[in-house]
Length: 482
Image (cartoon, rainbow, N blue to C red; front, side):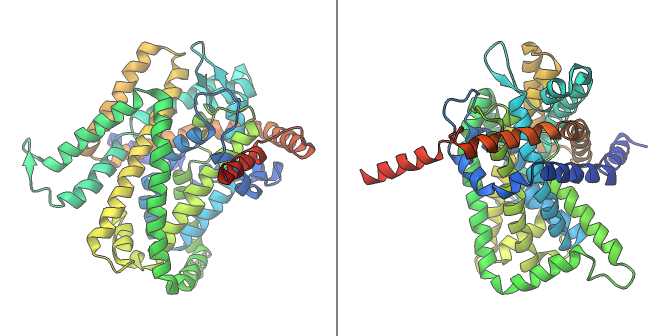
């Protein structure tokens, strides 16, 4: 058995029924214990996301922390992952993706609450937090070994898979597909000019951003993330409304497929299970609720209220899956892209190229640009995650951290020139192994999350806590009146 086959087998075990049940179960437990606080207050959470808190300690604004987390979360999974789920499990997979995301909102909320509550201030004044600290501080020193496990798997996932080579391959592949689809202009014997030049330019851009740490990463993502989401959502909305006549049929396909109603006699349960498996798995991969990655960014937010930051964090799952993945999935089903015998990104390309009466190249360009921005932002976000994990793992050894950073950059640079199947399996495996310690901590600390939630709302209702929204609204109105 080859190394690739071993990794693939282990990946299948880790991301089996047990993992999916655990992640859904922890979302249900957290939703119940907090009385569905995160889901009910999404509008307020979105207001908190764009109105930074005054006077809080942290490295970046709440919005910067959110966009850093979204940079790592909103990626190729929103374009390729949704298509893969629908092709593997049928249109019904989209329903189960949303089902997982609904409870994932509470999971992401809890991760943000715990990240801020248990974060630590390092000797240099910077903030470090995430699952490793809420495991160590929340569950006790005797669980530090579990925190170290999370940090180890997070470091490996970032540098050797999900944050580097896989994303870079996606960026370069998307650009080359547009500018030189046949890769006929060759240099160095076997690689096209387009592939090599694109790789060099993007690698330099990555270096220039990550050497500035979380502050520069946040500055860049605060600009890239909103722009890329607006570009993609507006394009999808145009396709959506142009094909609005197909919406009723698409909705029927999604719900019928979710419960096996389209299967032949005797195969309904099997069809339902396949749709559920593909939808839940891709939903978890897309929004990362339960993996423990997003709370690393949440811990750096300038905030005094852990519940407020938890609410900001919860909007990540809402925007990633409930908004972007839903739009991708409906565009695919409404345009019939899933019935063309295509695979992966080609399914979404078909939807964008044929969903509107524009030349095919326009849809391909929009999708290539979206893929490029999504993947580039993921590289930046995961660099921060991975470095924070490595920092905790090595007890802040700066020399080791510098070496790790260059390993990360090297993995980015080689991405477009390596076979990706084993790398994707390895990245998935490390993500799954990250999730186990995090999910254990979320179950163990669910009571803490419930207590903090109740305390926050008691203070907010009584007027003891002023969230600043009224003052911000008054200031905006005064500015308009001038």
